[in-house]
Image (cartoon, rainbow, N blue to C red; front, side, top):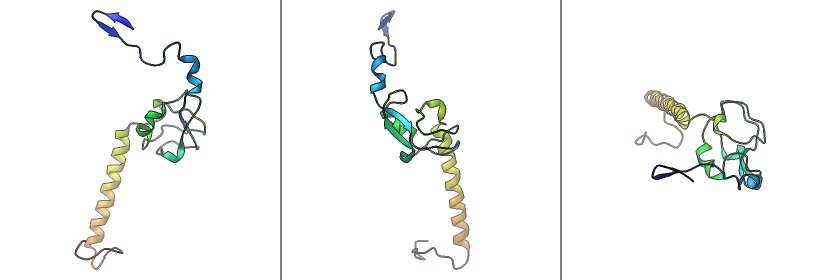
Length: 122
């Protein structure tokens, strides 16, 4: 740690002594081929060795994000490969609005009641 005035300056990332052992750590890799625009799920991510990708603690941050480019099996995950979570939330919000609009129109249609629904709850 270096000193900057009264406060120490911290260096983030692995220390020089840790770098040779990085290959023995685990990290997040692609378990399936994924096309650009698809959402990351547990099924298409895998935590394996070597440790050249994201640390396993980042798996929750990756889930639900869209990939920016086509990814092949065995690609180490990196922030440059995924979109922001805000982008995914906007798409989900748009889909929710469309479903709500469609449901409202169906409700107004005379005599329509979805299977399993009661008239009073619909």
